[in-house]
Each structure stands twice: as C-alpha cells, then as structure tokens.
Amino acid sequence: MHGKTALIQKYYDRYANVYDDKHGVSMAGQSHNFTLYYEPFLLETIPSGSNVLELGCGSGFYTKWLVDHGCQVTAMDISHNIMECARRRCPDAKYVEGDCENPKAYLDQAGAPNQFDIILGVNTFSYYPNKADALRCYKQLLSQSGKLVLLDMNGQSPLYRIMRMTGKNEMREWYNEVSESTRSSLSKLVKEAGMHINRLGHFAFIPNGVNQSVVSMLRPFDALLHRLPGIRDYSMRIVLIAEGNE
Image (tube, rainbow, N blue to C red; front, side, top):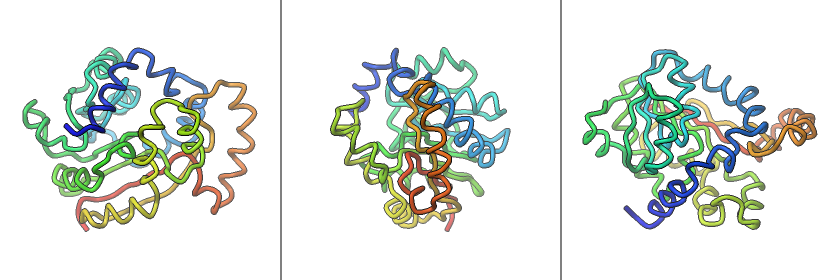
C-alpha cells in the first residue's frame, strides 16, 4: 500500500462515525442534488438486477440504494471502520475490504465475483493517485457488455480549490489528485485503457454539505447555471459512463 492510499485509509477510519455529517450525506445539499441529479442519472444508467461492484462504498448510502433498486452488490472500501457503518445501513450487500485502485486481488481472496455488469464509483475515483492502473484493472472485471460508471468530483470546479485553501475535509492533502478529475484528463485516461466513453458530462452547483436555508438561497442560481453550457463545465460533479471494449 503506497503512502497516499494509507493516508486515505487513516482519514476514513478516523472519521467513519461522523462521515455522513462531515461529508454532507445527511445534509440538505446532498438531498437536493440526489433528487435532482444523482438519482435520475443512476436510474438511467444502472438497470435493476445488475451485478454491481461499488468502489469506495463509504457509509453505505449508495449501497442501500443499489440493493433497494434490485441490484446484486459487492461493496468495497479501504476503511474497515467506515465499511462497518455500511454493513449496519445495508446488511444485504457483500462487503470486501481492500484497495479500490486494485480490487481484483481482494475480490479473489474473498471469493467474490470477478465479473460485473456495472462498476460504480461515487466520489471515489478522483482520489486515486494511480488512475491509469485502476482503469486497466476495472476493464478486466467488466463483463462483455459491462459499464464503468463514475459520479465524482469535478476537478475544474473552483470550490475544491477553495476547500483546499480553507482546509475543509481532506482536500488539502488530496487536491492534486482531485484536480486530475477533468473532462480532458478522464477522456485521455479512459481511451488509453482501451475503453469507450458513452457519456461525459457535468452537473450540480450546490455543495452537498449545506443546510436547507442555503439550498433554498442557491437553488435559483443552480437552475440558472445549468442553462449555460460553458459554465456547466465548472459545476461540482462530473459523470462518466464507459464500456470495457473500444
């Protein structure tokens, strides 16, 4: 395990019990974005009944959504403590503890499936120092018609630069990795891994970790900014759908 991976493991082990508040999962901003953007994207992309590998399951919010959606879920995270939170939230998934940059070895050890219809990462891939190696590994794990689905932090968003400057969450240590999560960088990495991009886009200008009064204040601006194609590229989230075969 390299130094950056150990750092993120230590961070999430430490903050597992307050993760939902610290990272906005339980906040009004997350609820707004999930209802308006995240869930419609996931419903369009992931058919019910899919065999899904979830990368970086965190406290299990999306794990539960996937299971409730009728998917067979293998959920993976490098943090033992936060994966215990996910088990409590959603006991009906299979959990594998390990490095999500290189899941194959951990899946084999756990007797988990090694072919998936969907590999899903929500706010995880942007953290990886070795994105190219990770993509090559994911390609091996995708079934013939399988898809890689990423809903992640957009490295072009100015908010993450501000978060780094203010020391918000872990962004100071991980800003360089997150800044690689851009349209041009992801396009290049995915194509070099021998995969084909089906969709690459952006949405959401409201931070997940804000309360209802802030959401109410920002909602009109969120709607306006989404009507401006050039500005939309600077929103908080980037989404990518890629197939394993070129």
